Image 1 (tube, rainbow, N blue to C red):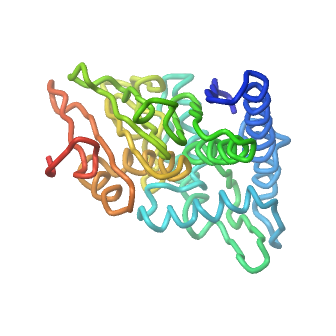
Image 2 (cartoon, rainbow, N blue to C red):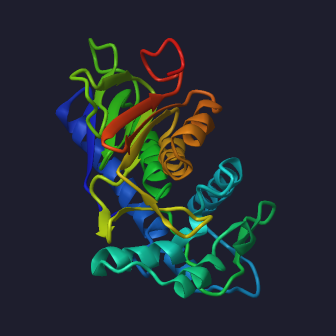
Length: 302
């Protein structure tokens, strides 16, 4: 999926552990062939290439589950998360390579292909129709999380009770390692405290921010996350870390919260059962941090 992955397991024997890890990676490789927007032969890329579609088409169970979940999250976040954002991310990827921001006309044209009106889903038939010309699906805020969830299911079917999957910062854990209270996860980006970590079991944690993918254009820092509602790159520096019961949710909510900003982003996460968030951003020359009440170790909103 264009990023390093690691899988750590506690198993009854080295052979059982290696076999489970191999099966987990095989599941990720399988889902890459379904969900990658970099591979022109993936199921998702072939679907995008058909836009605009005169008739709906049936899709695989995995692609359907991702698209259906993405549509729910799009509605829940008032459009801050949107899997149809592909035309805009394509423009901003080019901007990061060239150092030149997309022109107003090109952004306006791309925005016409983005939004709830662009994608039609039929749950009864499990079919999909891409309505707008120039559409391109971008699973960047949900695909890795979904693949991690499916890989963990593979490990569990092989009898692995305690495991950690790390998809380049999208981290999913199951039961605690033997003799431990949980998995000790460092929270990125590093805060001001030396004890910047959380202990997790049966949960996911992921960070969305501009620490590694950003471009300076003029005096403005532009991150790689795009606001689907405006077409603009989210300004930085900023980052949000989300804890959720599953990695699909953590991945998508972190993206949406970064788009929404500290106040609205934390409010969106706090309203979901089992979820917590920490937002870090630069305000003038100072670095500020805010967390939800549900963030580990917090006894009051701050």
